[in-house]
Length: 113
Length: 111
Image (cartoon, rainbow over all chains, first blue to last red; front, side, top):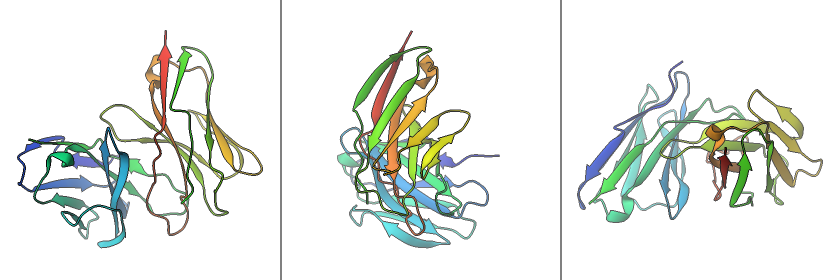
């Protein structure tokens, strides 16, 4: 079965711009989470969506936002990009059953110049 | 959320068994223990998950003592392709929908 698909794989943006990343979860998975990975901070939780509702949120500024559509696909938006936003952005989906493992996508590598 | 402690790095040779231990003293009654593997520029990959005693799948085994304050991921007969970062996480239970990753263990397998 198809895995978690993230697009685009690579992106270069300029400071001050905004960017939208897309994530298509595994069919049937209703929970979608986003993570940011940088060499300095490691993997950090951004937010999680379930049935089009944000259910959990990490400690990121309001410039980071997301949404989930009725087909469970999710988008993440970062406005007013800063150099420090350069990172690998990962999306993970799950069935939302207790104790069930998440499946991650390959990520979107965002470079802010 | 339970904090985990793992060795920062480990070295091994092809064909050896590798055991990575994770300490999680504050694990809660409902928490599961989950291990992920990550290669550079890829998302983490679910390896194994357990609650107590021993769990085994086609890739690894997970040993959890009775007090559940630690766990050991065992990789039998590692190969070069097992070189990766391994993360131990606790806390996947009902209503808990975010993963808290520690620094992980960087495993280097040499010929």
